[in-house]
Image 1 (cartoon, protein in one colour):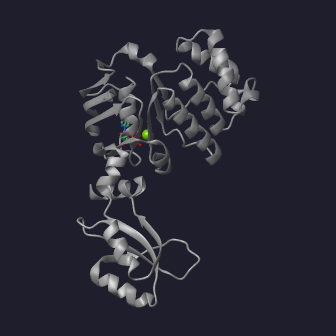
Image 2: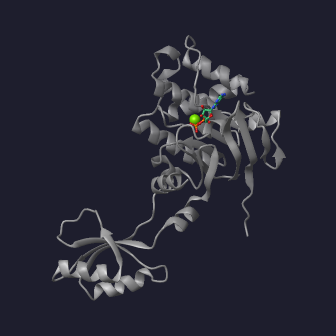
Image 3: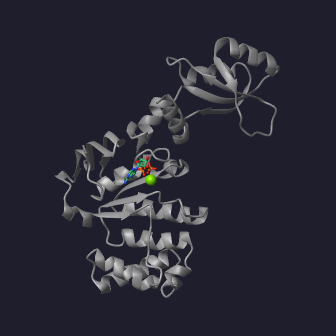
Length: 311
Ligand code: ADP
Ligand code: MG
């Protein structure tokens, strides 16, 4: 059996700023080759945790292990970090700036240039090489920063709110690049307070709320735990009003909302835990024509809102 090892382990990390506790005993484990979403409302502590992992902020307690070694100075070259505050030198040209930053990370100039050309073509910014940084919009500058973050092919990539400055087209482009980097062997951590990107990218998540981790794990496992055995149903019978009454006597029901072209009864049915979809479906087929039958799986957004509310 193939066992998945962890690239990063954050173990019981706490951090105070004055009297304010920014991180309270937070632990996360990031499996090798995963895309790990660090989720939480504004001010939850995501950036603080990311800064701890990047050795910019020293934790008061706890420790961080990278590839089974306590985090040390030399690990910085193994991590590509796109910070939330992204500063570039305004007066430099795009190409010379990117080359300069790549060399700071230990790359040879010729090799850096070769890889930059490939990345610029890939992100459709080939003609930006001689533009001044100050001519770039926020999203354009962010594309350059993204390239510089991943260029030296570090094994761990950490993006702090990577989609915040992008239009939908560029956000989707960056999403695809993140998936490709993962497929090529990188492990990715990114923070976000927006949930759409989570569904498309993450296999693991941790939810931080008010400095505490309140939920973490494999996203599919979490969804399995949060699902409620509820099915969204479309059914047409001789008398849909009577059918609705009958269903409401047997099950916990609520109105469903999905698009169809017919006049069927649309309803959500919550089954007791010991009853299966097959039981419900065979019952329904005796009552009418079933046109729609889907299990309702909570979205990352549903889980986020529900968990934050309960804490
Ligand atoms: P997030 O990234 O989840 O939005 P942050 O980690 O940036 O949250 O911040 C968490 C909390 O810690 C916030 O209330 C913030 O004001 C506070 N904080 C972060 N850095 C500092 C600092 N250097 N000094 C004082 N307070 C800080
Ligand atoms: Mg932040």
